[in-house]
Length: 386
Ligand SMILES: Cc1cc2nc3c(=O)[nH]c(=O)nc-3n(C[C@H](O)[C@H](O)[C@H](O)COP(=O)(O)OP(=O)(O)OC[C@H]3O[C@@H](n4cnc5c(N)ncnc54)[C@H](O)[C@@H]3O)c2cc1C
Image 1: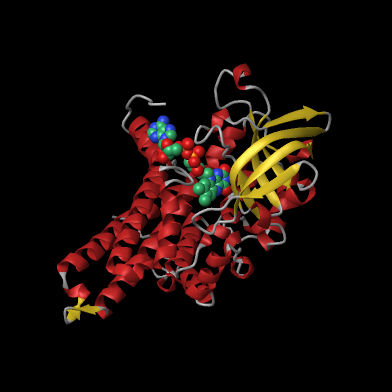
Image 2: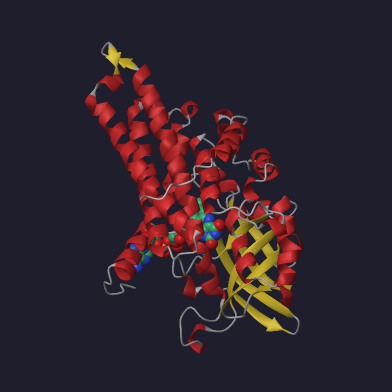
C-alpha cells in the first residue's frame, strides 16, 4: 500500500494567508530597489514558520521536513520568495546535530524566537567553485582564539543576519590523507566581526538576492565558535545538504505551480484571432506538460522528505528531487513567459521576475551536472568523473 503523505493543510492555509499580505507590487518594488524584504521575513519569523525544524525543547515546533517543504512551497506558490530567509530553517541543523550542549542552549532558543538571525552560510569561494575541499580560507588556532583569513563569494543574506556558519581550513590539504579532512565549521557573530576583520561587499545580480562577497583579514574569533570537532567540518556541511536540497526543491515546486496557474489563467482570458489563446493546442499542451512535470517532481520531493523524516538515508532521492523540481520550475517558467507573449516581458505581470528567480535553481545550491554525477557514481556505480 502506498504510504499516505500528510499534506499539512492547516500550515499551508496559514502561510497562504500571510503571503496574501505581500502581493506582486511588494516584490516588484523591492526588485527595482534591490531591497531586502524585511517586513516579509519578520512576518514569516513571527508566524514561527522558520522555526519548524527546531526541536520543541529549544523553542521550535519540532516538526519535520514535510512541514517545512509545505511552508516553502506555499510561499513560492503565492508569488513570494523565501530565498531571503530559507537558510534560517536549515543552517541551524549543523548546530543542532554537531554543536555542544552549551552552543545549542545558547543559540537555538534565540534562533527559534527570531531574536538571532542565522541566515548566512559561507562555503563557496571564488577560486574553488563547487570543489569545496579546495577552499583557501584558513582558521588558525592561536591560544583560545582562531585567526581567520580569506574570502568567500555568494555569501547571501550576511547583511541581514546576526550569525554566519563558516567553512574554513584548519590544516593544510596536503597534510590530510583524505581531501575532505582538515576543514572546520565555525559559528561567527557577524555583529562583532564587522569592522574587526570582516568586510562585506554586495554583488549586483540578475535577481534580488542580497548576496555578497566577504573578506576575512585577521578576524579573531573565540575557540568556542568551533562547531563539533576540528577537521571534521566538511562532513557536517554534507550532513545538512540533503535537507537543503529537499527544501529548495519545494520552492521550485511552488514556483512551478505559480507559473502553471498564471499561464492557464492568461490562456483562458487572452483572445487573439477571436478566440482564447488557450483553445489552441500549441498553447495548452505546454501548460499541460509543465503541470504533469510538476506533479511528477513533487512525488519525488515528498518521497525524499518522508525518507529524511524517517531517518532513512535519502541522498539519491534528495538529489533527484532537486534536479526534477528545478527542471519542472524552469520548464514552467519558460512556458509561462511564452504563453504571455510580449506581455511576459512587462514587469507588472511578475512573470519575468519569477522567471529570473527560478533560473537560479539550475545552479545553486548545487548545479544539475553534479546531481547527474552523483546519480551516475553513487546509484549506478559508474566510475567517478572528478
Ligand atoms: C544568487 C546566488 C546565491 C548563492 N548563495 C550562496 C550562499 O549563501 N552560500 C554559499 O556558500 N554559496 C552560495 N552560492 C554559490 C552556489 O552554491 C554556487 O554558485 C554553485 O554551487 C556553483 O558553484 P560555482 O558558481 O563556483 O560554479 P563552478 O563550480 O565554477 O561550475 C561552473 C559550471 O561548470 C560545471 N562544472 C564544473 N565542474 C564540473 C564537472 N566536473 N563536471 C561537470 N560539470 C562541471 C558546473 O555544473 C557549472 O555549471 C550562491 C550562488 C548564487 C548565484
